[in-house]
Length: 306
View 1 (cartoon, helix red, strand yellow):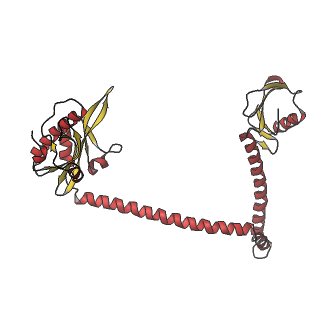
View 2 (cartoon, helix red, strand yellow):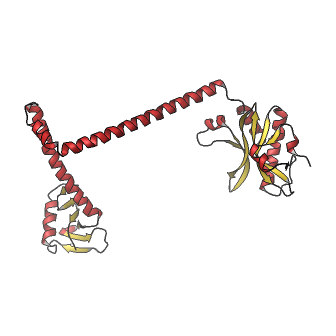
View 3 (cartoon, helix red, strand yellow):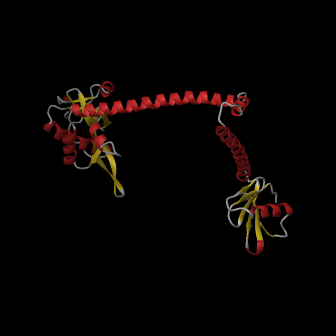
């Protein structure tokens, strides 16, 4: 039985050699009885082609499979080495073909990976195509490729440093600004109002600040009202009322399914009052402690228990 490891340019990887000292790696094709034998035979075909064409290359077996004969193993995958550097890897993988799967060559290295957006390897079932792709892409990295990779790395690193520095700066600024705001709205607020009413600013600037403060109070009140109604709707603590024809209504608690039909006269006074207020506003409008007019015929009323 020929041992593939007797060939001068074929060896096991350092890890495999330490784990399996003195093993025999089948140099010939195996009788196909399973998937491991198919993989081995495809890789033997590849090795035979490459060893003839590239006698200066070294083939480093990085994966082996067991065989029926004790102490004998089959090839599972190999790297191609040249002048101390790895040019790439040859593997076998399964690819879908119709309703089944077929074994294909999977050729990979950095150069191939960069040329594909989705896949990191080149796959083909055809031995000649696989060898042609290896011939085209398996050669030492050129100085221009090294430079391009170095430039890309420099840009990436510079960008990351910029992001990190900016993030750290923003973190410190936000911390100081938070403390400053706490001071201003706390013990510093009377000092600020005293400054606004002093002669240190112009009448126009004073008016602008005071107007903004007035509007801010109004907006805060509106926001609080919206938050209260939002919480009521979100927490199923309101009543949905839908107006139908002839001023009849469908009434249902939010999140429930046990609705009832009511006429205008059957609505309780509180609900009728809230509906009357909401009918005066545009759809999408809100009235504090009353509800929302969802659209022309739908209303969400707060604090109504049916």
